[in-house]
Image (tube, rainbow over all chains, first blue to last red; front, side):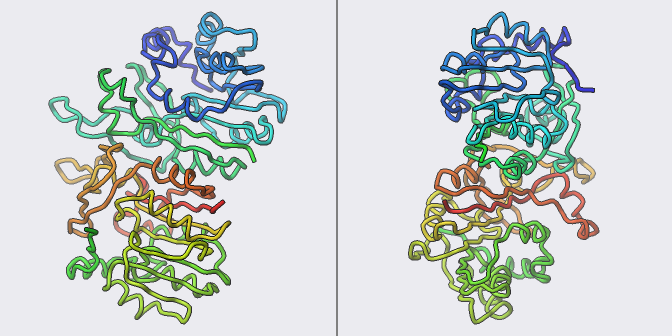
Length: 243
Length: 243
């Protein structure tokens, strides 16, 4: 049974208070890095897997996408997406990305922002993405970094006075379910190695174009805790092309 | 000034006692994974950067390489290479890989095994490797994993009774010099991010073919400490093609 934490009242309320929820793309630390590796959207058919509030769908539509399909498992997230990020060229659909059925060769660009770590099986998903894309179509995603997901709790390791000592890595090669604490709530996430993320793409026929571990941007360094993000990689950004 | 730790008497003596030094490729935990991504050597011109004892040079020659140039900064390592791993098709040369000058388009295959973390500047080296390779030539390397090099000491984090708690990551985005402890000796190594390792290759014109974080092989699990290697990634293997 797939977890749908974003339809949980309390979690959803907390999530809506995050910088990235209130400010959108400008409030997301990785946006400046992600933006640089996004393809041109003009005239393109775009699929956004795990679109959440729809910020990336709207960005694609605003930049000339002909059609954008945003999918998410959470009704609550899509409610906000429809309110705040609607467009005549955007369609939102409530479905988990694992259950999605789409025609082959139907999209020019497939995006996914910070959603793959909620997905149990990566390989069949990549097979589908490959199938749904046209030849030379681009697949760009961000996910939580394997360093960030391996231990499980996703928290720093502290000394007895509460100072950060370092970030812990453990059970790296044991992929699968982790009980993460996010916004003070328990959330199921899935750890997979970097090998699995990158090599699966290559094996399924994608050519890797960019592999980026985004650093916190200079202008966000004054946000509480942001300087510590120089100490661990939290996210992985990948762009690739269907060959 | 480049460090040449392998010419240090004590360090060299300790290194020569390691499983991988005594048994060669069969004693190296990553060999079974590396072997799978090596290209066919028959009739090829091969360069091995930081060849050490020359195990990989000998493997290339034994598998039909027409010419193998093995380079290393350490006289002592090359002395052993010439004794144990010589071949009519192998030439060993004592020089640091940063100082190497070679004609353009002169090699089919360039290898490097666990040497790049001793190199300060990766980008100019990759530029040279690209230049030295023929078009469609292959570049295959292993290096210590960024997770393994980031903190610096390269040791586990223990509880007060000496049990392993986890592996520490810190200062991930601060690339550069680390004071590592290897075989009980201080050795200068250089940390760089995964972004730097992989994206530099792509930017300089390589297409990535395999990205592997090797797990300890089943048949080595009885070696002391090997089971713990399931808890952290220690190495990164990459194969790529000059396009």
